[in-house]
Length: 417
Image (cartoon, rainbow, N blue to C red):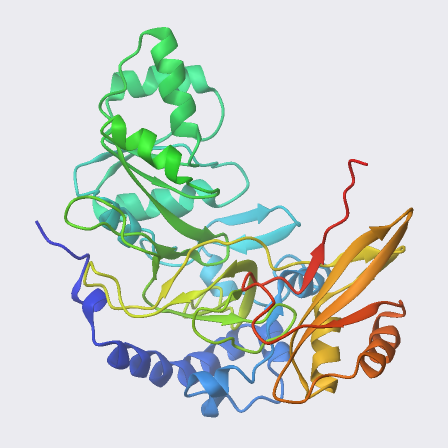
């Protein structure tokens, strides 16, 4: 049995990087000519010069609120989609609302690799319990499973009893859905005296697969792996296993994607291992998103996966980067903290802690020095007030004191009291 989906997964990392950035300038030129919204967003950028990560990092990060503004002004896609790619295809709407098109060709969301890494092979039967209604979730995995050669039952969400009945009859060996829905199905089947022992593997997403839940599935003889997917890109990264079936550390970034981890509220890449926001550039001709901020937190793992796949590894989903917080009736945004840091070269890292002082909101800006010079609290406090229009104390901490969790704003108010 083949260990990898194709040879591209085991390419020399430098060769992959070179190929991606060799193709990027021409792709951007063609994409901006077909998508006027993207052209406006990248106006003034020398697209021919975007030939490495440093050049890519100088481009602006497009985040969902900005894309939603484009779409509201020019519905449905804000000019970020090639209209010729919509012919004979599907359009979806995700919460936000945000409109998304289906890409072209088989497996447009590139989920076949994730199924293969999870153990699925041609001829397997997949019970797909992701939503097929309005959002692309069900189709993201459906298309990839069928492209791999699997047979798919489009179960969708809800109707647990009916899903149990269907699975007991169809005898699928692969489950696909959220991490906890399989457990609900198994428990309901046990109560009803139905046999779901045909499930041998699972590919889950859309929530946390806790180690205890994974172990519970393993005890039932079901190997469950997870993938990190979004409506905009499909599968961004996926898990693999060791020869004994145990999951390898981290998630492997999918082919044909450029993934960066940036400091929340900015477009500045962080160092390897530091938690930040996942930013993705794709080569999807129908939906050419460039430096799109997912709003999700993760970090890059060093080295390559023990499974032999050589692409970048990330830790997986680690929370949300959108930490916009209301303080004393006014919103404070991570971008404002990033602006403050940019005005003070002596500050290396900063985190705004929001708490309660009696019945009032209180802010404390915790800062680490960038070098040997300690930031002057009074000067930083003045900048904090100028930018946020709110007063707050500044606490100077030693280097390395702030947790590596990607938080720029930490809301520590206890709303239960």
